[in-house]
Image (cartoon, rainbow, N blue to C red):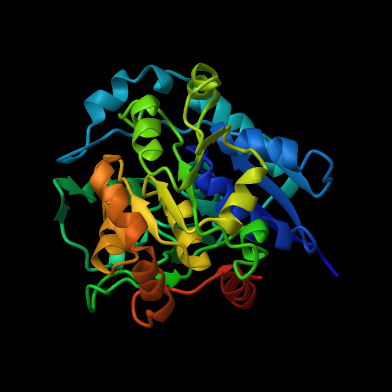
Length: 372
């Protein structure tokens, strides 16, 4: 049987895009020759993860970061960013050369918010499929402003990066109300979940006194880690497992809080804590919130300053799947812990809001039926 030829683009900002596409990429490894256009975190991860896979080639591309503003995109600020001072033409032309030597004209191009692979698809007139979470804003009936944030910048990026697609797929942990007729078709699927999440058995070894706290970036998360620890320590009968970067942990090795445990992000104990905990405190990113809803774990959501996180937090708070608040607060934390059973019940009994996952098998079937 002839192997399919697939070019796959993956955004490298953070790790959410990387892990979201991994189950689909690994499925097609068995039947396809794959080239992955990647940068940042996705390039680092895939270069290591697939280092011994001959059917996969990782190629670095360069993508400028377009700064959002209340008017959409701020091109003036985008031009000033030091990170954007790269020779994009040279880097990406070399990527095109390498991809063509391996694949020539591929059968399909799939991208998760990575525009260089889309340009390759347009150049060679190849079907393009986008898989991300942002595309739901093209067809969903969302409030134009939420807590002072807009999603106009997301729409502008989508139109710039992917003006046309053979199919647009968006993953979402919640149902997306459609705008109505006349809008572009976006196929909404439940979240793509890693195998390590799907395999977790929440019916065993439940710890009724355990909260997982995930702080991915102190630069974005404005509360000092010491303040976070002090607030958690006020709940003396609850254990807190805080996953944060090494720069925060090294100054707290001899902290006086007996009920707080610190770990670096990526520590394998994360999945053990996720199996046992009764609640999660985290920023409101798509990946961890989706995993929490799949596992039936209430969330204390602390949204960062982007529309998507505020929308995710809004869904959590509105439907009593947890709470939302701009930061760590002693009274809010007490309320979250005391009302945990009510939040668990709301997640379990919901039939209208949550999209039950994992969604990767449904997405794979759609791709194979329509494009391969």
